[in-house]
Structure formats: structure tokens, C-alpha cells
Image (cartoon, rainbow, N blue to C red; front, side, top):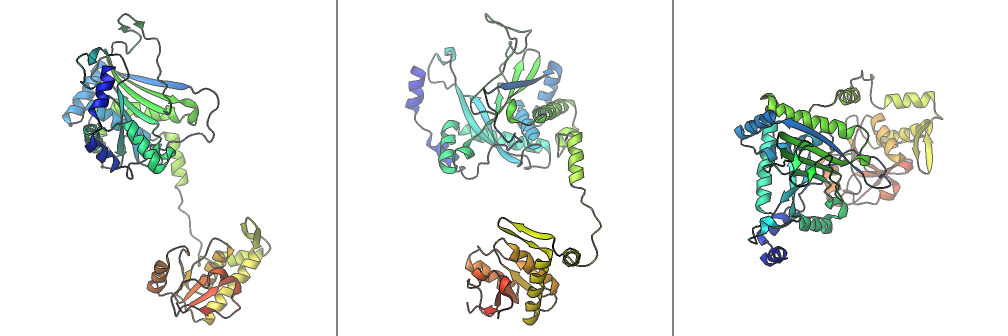
Length: 421
């Protein structure tokens, strides 16, 4: 009771509050990892994956980190981020870092039993440096700065994020928990918990958490664990991500090369094969111009569907006729080969006919979004030196620059209307 009252009496740290609120609009979202399309039903079940470094290797890892000016906690957090980045949609994300924040506000505070956990929303950019050791240093510097401002707690910041960007944006379900520096004799089944017996199995299950990486110093080395809602992730993803994390931690204790590596986590071989196959796009390009295969196809199969939309379809033959009329109209307006024609339309078949018509007339098409501000549209038409604007009939009366003919694509037999601006 006295501790809780003392924390409340201490008041809010205004400097910490300003520090975090100034970052509300730049703090990235949590790692967007692969998940199943439908949320699992039934009770939520966490599954633990764990690995232990021997005492010798753990000592080697700490020596290597110290030689590079990185604390063990920051090093392992950076390694965790690298493993996640291999699977995350974006290389920049926020990790939810738990910290023990037992403040010295009462003379008997060390005798209290309770939850003294605070949260720090740690921004990580896995492209912030060319090497792993550089990125680990950046993680440490950011973490230290954040810890200096922990007077405004992570729970308060999450509420601010939810108010500013909505509850989904404020979800931070990927967690990093480090209790290094406190030897926990119950870290393995062989170690007794004084007065409580032996640890047989353990797993953490926290509401609103999907994945929690925990690093614990035990009597005979380092224990690293991932507790995750197994059903949220596609089969095999967690196994391979955890294996990549473990391999990185082990290799950091082994030698020098991985510290200077740009990509320290190895992509699984079968995934590398898929990526290579998808990116094997080298092909011999067809000879001739871009539009010529379309008109060849239209001549061979005029009744085949060329454009399909929610309320209709258009055949190759029909589209070719519309494109031909566009080309004829551009010729009548004096468009010569190599000259530019603006195509400014909403989504629809008219876009396709306009582009094909411009190409058939020998022109160069310039796509312009019709929803842009009028000043921007005018700038693009003027500075591309467009000879004609092709649009849809409903947009002909738009704010077009004077002196440039504006033609509705499905009415190209009518006289084009030049807009006076």
C-alpha cells in the first residue's frame, strides 16, 4: 500500500511525457509477421521454444559484446529483431520491451512481492546500419534514451497511441523480456528453487501478447525462450524464425565475421529457392512495340474477352475499334510520333483504350491521376508539354489548362473540346 501511494504521490514526469508524445506520429507499428487468415477459436494456448547456451559460450558471448561496447541485453534484443526482420513485412518496427521498475520509494521495497513491470516501446530499424554490430549499437542507444524517459510508462503511451491512431495501431504484441544480471537458480530442471522444489516446465501466457522472447541467465549458462500463440502463425514459421535466432546467437559467440555481416540471419534454403524462382524474371522480350501484340491478338480472336469489370466486359475486337478511333482522333489533332498525350481517367476500360490509342498513333502517354489538386494537374499537363488530354466524358469539363484539347475517349467521333481554363 505504501509503495503504491508513494508512486502516485511522485506525479507524472512531464519531460518524459513530452518525449514520448513527440514520437506518437513516427513510432512504427509492431512487426507485421505472417499470420493465419482466420483467428483460432477456442482457448488461447501458448507454446514454448527454448535453447540454452553453455556457460563457456555464454561467457564468450558476453566478452565479445563487451569488446564492442554492447550490453548483453541490447545484443540479444538486436539479434531477436534481426530474426523477426527476416519474416516481417517492414524492416522498421516497434518491440514491446518489459523492464523491472522497482523504484526505491520505500525502505522495505526489496521485500515486496508484486508486479513491478513497466513497458518501453523500443523502435528498431534493421536497415539503420550496414553491419549487425552497427545496428546492435543503434538498438542500445535508443534503448538507453528510452529508459531515461521511462517516467511516462508504456501503458500510458499505448493509450495515447490508441487515441491518436486507433486500437489496432496501438497493439504491440511482440515482446522482449530480459532478466540478465540476476542469476535464477531455477532456470533448469536440475536447479532447485529454494523451498519450492524443481522447475519441471514453464511457459508465460500474457493477454494481448502473440510472441514473447525471454532471456534468462541461469546457473550454467544462458536460457533463451520464445513463448507464442502457436495457432496464430502458419505452420513452420515459428520453428524457422526461432532456429534463425538461435543460430545467430550461437554464431555471435563463435567468431568475428557475423558481427560485421549485413544479413546475419540465414534465409532457410527452401524459402531462398522460392524467392529465387519468383525473381527469375529474365525473359526474351518480344520484338516490336508494346501495343502490337494486342492488335495481333484482336485480329486472331476478336470475340475473346479483353477487359472484364464488375458490370460488364469488352472483347478484343471492341477494344481495338475504340483504340483505333482514339489513334485517328489524335492524328486529326496533329499529334506526331514521340509527342506526349495525358491520360487522366478513373479506373475503367477507357484507360486501356486510351493507352493503346496513344501508342498506335506513335505518341507517348503520360498518366495523371484525376483526383489530384487542380493546380498539380495543370502543372503536369503544362510541364510535360502534352498536346492532348484524354479523359472520360464526365471529366471533360474539369479544370484543364487552356489551349490544350480535351477529348472524351468514348466520344472521339465528336469534335474535341478545348478547355479555356
